[in-house]
Length: 125
Length: 109
Image 1: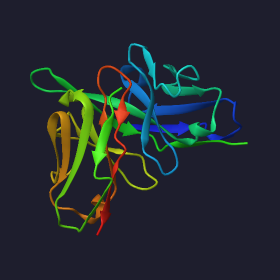
Image 2 (image 1 turned 60 degrees about the vertical axis):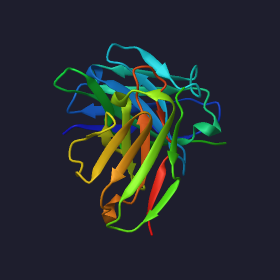
Image 3 (image 1 turned 180 degrees about the vertical axis):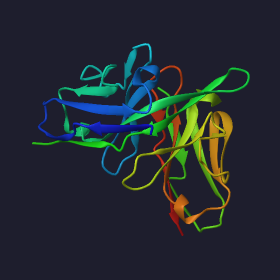
Image 4 (image 1 turned 90 degrees about the horizontal axis):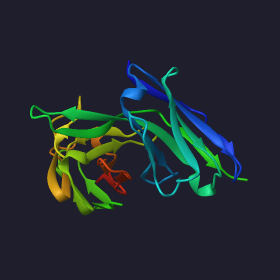
C-alpha cells in the first residue's frame, strides 16, 4: 500500500528545535518531489518546503533559514528539521507526494496525490 | 509569489444542487500546475483535480475543473452529503514557492 506516516510532533518551547519524520511505503521517496505542508489550527493550508528528486530544496519565506528538508534513501524517509521555532509555527504538519502525470503528447501536470495523516507541532512556553 | 484568492469564502447549498467554486491567481498560472483538494475535518487533504481539469484516481465524475490563465473553477454538478467540506486550489508550478488558496467552505444549507 502506498502511504506516508509522519511522526515527531509535540510540544516545544519557543526557540527550540524539532525534527519531523515522514516514512514512506509502497514507493521510493527519492524518485519523487516531496513537500511539507502545514495547517495552523482553524486555518488553511500553507506550503512549507519541497525537495526535488534531484536533491534541490526550496522553502517558504516564513521558514527559510530555520527549517531544513532532507531525506534518507536507505530508510525511505523524508525529514523536516525545524530550528528557532516560533509560536506561529504551531500547526499540523503534513508530508505529501507530488505526482506528475503525462499525456499522450508528453506534456505534464501534477498534484499532491498522497498525504500523510499529519503530526501536530505546538510551540508554546 | 503567486497569490490565489478563492471565492466565495463560504457556500451554503443543499444536496442535489450545483456548486461553483472560484480560484483567481494574482498572475497567470499554467493550467498544468493548478490543482484542487478537498479536506474534511480531522483529515488530510485529498487530491480531486490536477492540471486544472483532470480528475484524480477514484474521484467521481460529478467533480470537474476548468479555467486557464488567472481564473479557475471547480464545479460539483450534484452535491452529495459527503461533498460538504473545505476546498482548496493550489498552484504547484515548476518554480517554488507553491501556494494554496485560503479555501472555500461548502456547507449544508
